[in-house]
Image (tube, rainbow, N blue to C red; front, side, top):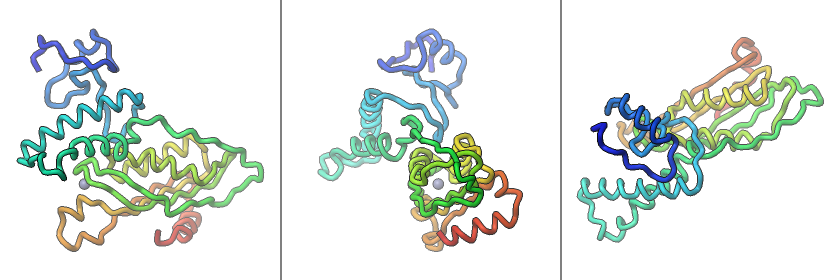
Length: 243
Ligand SMILES: [Zn+2]
């Protein structure tokens, strides 16, 4: 961008004018790290909570851009089925599919492991709903999480909220599993932790040959004793079975 052009500022910005000016001067146009309206850019599977007001503003801005895309695609918005689609798309992307990017981490209460539980605790069949960062198509499937507690335990339903928070972003499945594992290690400091995800990628289904319709992707992350103790790993895999 021409550095003499004054950037269009929105009312809600991450950077002050001076810092924005400095960063815009420094960066090229190819891979910017700040937007011209003063927002810091971050990875598709990163997290930066925004206010309800900022979300509203984002939906409005994205709706305008989707409407432009419809024009390029020669889709007439007098077609009643397309009239409000740019708005629906904007709202769906920001408030649903990418919701985890813009929401604060779930509040998770941790309890003491009073009975010194030292066996696997497993939750499986946790719903995965995510979006592939490469093609912006849905990823849907299930996740199994198992851990051997040290001093802390959590309610199993909390796994669902953690998976949801990390899933609702642009993801690749490998990193999704690692993010969930990192979060749980930090929260629980368990003796062992395993995260297995089994999902369908609609970028493969929509674009691929017929054989891809039924293909799934499985990733596993094993930490602590689940990575070093073969017997424990086998037990975990047996207990989660075919998800
Ligand atoms: Zn993809």
